[in-house]
Length: 205
Image (cartoon, rainbow, N blue to C red):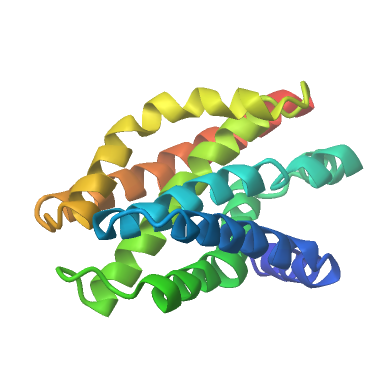
């Protein structure tokens, strides 16, 4: 696990666009929504729409370079633990992309009236960490076809998740939406990431 974390850490710093590109996309989308002058009750919807689009876009490159360079194939040949690889990639993304996105959102939108800083931060990061494996799955399914639109096949599975977000952040209903969100989060982190690993193996064959 430590080797994978070190690898992903170095990749992020050696390729700065891995950090500034998603943050730039998020910021631009966020500013566009603000410039539209939508009503206040859409303020936090803007945050999550921008986040949704950003996570979708960055998922397209999450595994592409490693796939094309043969790094993933080498890991499989060396019988490396691919789940550690997948989780390390997600962890580094969280540190260098998702947490800065949270900070940007807080700076420009503040907090919903019904949530504390801790509640909002935990919920927002849980949302991003739930979305990312789903979109990564769509990306890895379509990686040989090089068609980013194929990742959209995952969106129907996220419809209940979108309703949870609406209930939690727009309608302000903390219970039971937060607990359903946590269930979705655990499902994504465990099952979807395991599925990503299996699809990676299939794509390499």
